[in-house]
Structure formats: C-alpha cells, structure tokens
Image 1 (cartoon, rainbow, N blue to C red):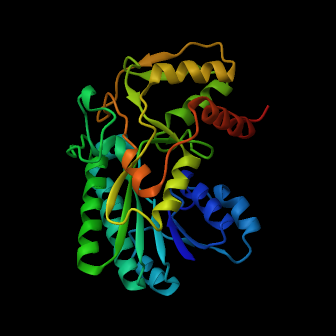
Image 2: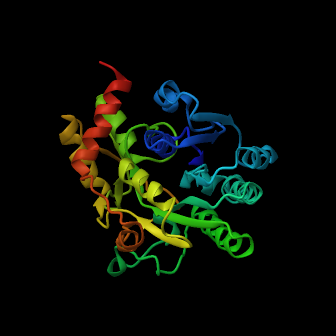
Amino acid sequence: MQVMVTGGAGFIGSNLVDRLLAEGHSVDVVDDLSTGSLGNLADARASASHALTFHHLDVRSDELVEVMGRRRPEVVFHLAAQADVRVSVERPVFDADVNILGTLRVLEGARAAGTARVAFAASGGTLYGECDPSELPVKESHPRRPLSPYGVSKMAAIDYLVAYRELHAVEFCALALANVYGPRQDPHGEAGVVAIFSDKLLRGESVTIFGDGEQTRDFVYVDDVVDAFVRAATRGGGLVLNIGTGNEVSVNELARVMGERAGATSSPVHAPARAGEIQRSSLDPERAGIHLGWRAWTELEAGVDGVLAYTRRQVGP
C-alpha cells in the first residue's frame, strides 16, 4: 500500500515509518525538520531501498497538495503538528497556523489525491480539558473543553475532518493520544517528561518537577501507539478514539520509578506550575478496544527501561 506520514521524521512518526516499512508498505515522509530529524529515519533510509521517499516540506505549503496529488497515497497518517502546550500559550497564532491550516492542506491534498483515509494524531490530554476526578478515565463522549490553544487547534482539526468526510468522502480516524513516551523523543524539544527526566538522570542531574508533582498523566508507550495507527488505517472510520492506558501516574511517582530504574541518587527539585496544563488526566481506551481491537500492553517500568537504554546510547559513557 502507498502511504504518507506527515511529521514522519519526528518521535512518533519515525517509529510509525519503521513499522510501515517492516510490513511492506511504500512510505512517503513529509517533514520540515523543525522538530524532527533525519537521524530518526537513518535505519529506515538505509534499509528501505526505494520504499521510502522523503519530502522536505512544511505541511502549510502549497506544494504539499501537488506532492500528494502526484504520489497518490491511499492512507495519510497526519502527525505533523506544533505539539508543545507552552508554545501554544505563548504563540497561539503560530499554533493555529500549523495545526489548523496545516491540517487543511493535508485534507486538500487528500481530496486531490483520492486518498481513502486520514489517520489523525489528536490530543486526548488537552482535548477534554480539566475533568472531575470522578470522570476519569475520561470517555470520548465527554464534552471537549480544551484549556490551551493547542487543545483548541486539535479540536478544530477534528471538526474539519468531519466536514471533509461529509463533503468529499475522505474517511478519517482520529486518535486522541495520551502522553506518549519512548525512544527518539527529544528531551530538548517538544514536551515529553519521560525523555526529559531520562536525560537529566543519566547525566547525574536533578529532575525538575513543576508544581507539587501530584498532577497525573496517562503514559502510553510509543510502540503501542504505533500499533493503534496501523490499525486505524483500516478500522474506526469516522471516530475519535482514545489511545491510552486508562491509568493515572503522578509526576512524583514517575520521578520515583525513573530514579530507581536509572540508579539515580539526586532528589527532584520543584518549580512553579506552568500555565495551560491540566491537573489530572487519563483516557478510557475501551472504545479503541472495540473498534480497533487495540489495547496498551507495555507496562510503565518496561517502557521506562526502553527509554533509559536509548538515552544511554545518546548520552554515551
């Protein structure tokens, strides 16, 4: 199958590209390398022969529609995004430009190419906003009340997906992702507390916890998320599906587990809480189980070990 991955040189995107190539698909990657890296695609480019084609493009560019019309992907995995909540608070126009107008370019390209489906990376943690603890893990039926421009832009993108499905028969499946972590996440780039903690711990530095550390997140491993995207290529049409574990882990607990697994001796330091971030979050994955046959299988300790092993290779002795 001919597929395209926008943001394919990024953290989740490059892991998805590896999986798609391993399954025998021909893959076009679109990435402007603003946060992604060709290094993330090194193995794929070395082993994929002519099955991988890289396009150095911004998803907001007019050229994207032309490229999609020429390459005619059957499925587009749209992962390219401005993905940092803090940046969205500081630069909301830029956030909307990338996440809303970029998605519109992808949809126009899909229409021009006769693409059957767009599998979209939505954000579960920011989409629903601050939920009452009694509502956790939150279901897809929960009202969408994002508290950051990033969450608003992702919600608007879903509305456009619905409109294009009705107007132009471009099918979609939107995956509302929990806090994804794993190898290749940049500790110096977009938000990713597991990657940041891993880098700090292995350098012998103290990790910084913003606020009291009792804020919770639903941490889901990247391999599990990639599996959900692959399934969304053929299932879950017209749906928004939560991709998470359904479990809450506090930042304090994450720091404790990671410190133990890394053999660290330093204690965390605390800093003021950050604007635009919710206090508690976890996603109910039951609907994804029904429609995708999906569930998360990687336990936190095993996932943390995978990140630490990857970071050790990057940091060196």
